[in-house]
Image (cartoon, rainbow, N blue to C red; front, side, top):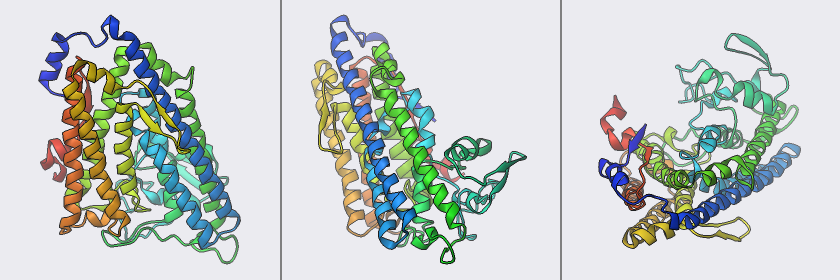
Length: 423
């Protein structure tokens, strides 16, 4: 769903000064350089943390234990921090949006990958592959063709299984497939507790639990290797000479609209709507972004930080170095300083609201518990985040108007047509 940012903005775009007046062109190109530099750094950090995850996965496979499983889980959590900050580069950048489903698709019918509780929500009767269980079956039938899955490889996951028959819930790759393999299903509903996969699910031989421990290890290794390769591809796209960097620099006016589109779409339809408000309306933990690990609070928080990063032209790398330069904020301030000041304030307020979710989750109330019917404290925290993100989007609208631009952003029935959610 897309949402045009209001008729008055579309009209303003026609009558206001051109987005790129000649005198503004060098400043605009500098802003786009900063934007691309932040993208390159964010995806580069995502590669580095995914490589650390691979090392932890290899240690788990080599010597399964409570300690190596916890270390692999911790490495997964660390890997999410830089990646979530890159989500503001989606939507307006077709190269990113077309690729993103390989690494961050959700929700998923996890029974495609491994064993699940047959009485759980994982049993999706509308998806013939919801209980395919690749790990248990070296021979598969997909789209009427027999598939030899004796060897579980990145190619099998990415080219054959992922989104098989065009069904988006058939997620075989990316962060959430790895998350499921490390945590297993979270069968606690809106009660306390995350997934509890035992380390013995990776032990080879007679002590293996869950069956097929050798294939489970192969799947985990293949999925992690594929994640790294996919992230390397996107980091290269933003490096000097990369296709994504070239796309924004070659068309500066469109590049500025791309930044605004990414900010607005993530802020409004994707984060406030599909990832936050929808789950609250349904009181459904299956709608939380990181549902196996109960780390949704981190995903939401770093999405908010990422939106602010691209507007202010500043990103802190995992090693503490700052990547910064001329920003979209500078362009807006030159046209309408009061709009820039308000938007910067709204960005800070939304990060603070998401930070309160994070703090409460870290002090004992997981995000899925916040979604529970009757949890007034959780509802207030979640609604506060939604309200801050929606208010922030209004400020993005004012920035669009100030720059004489016109964009469309992702919408969500949960925000735009709530009654449709229950139909």
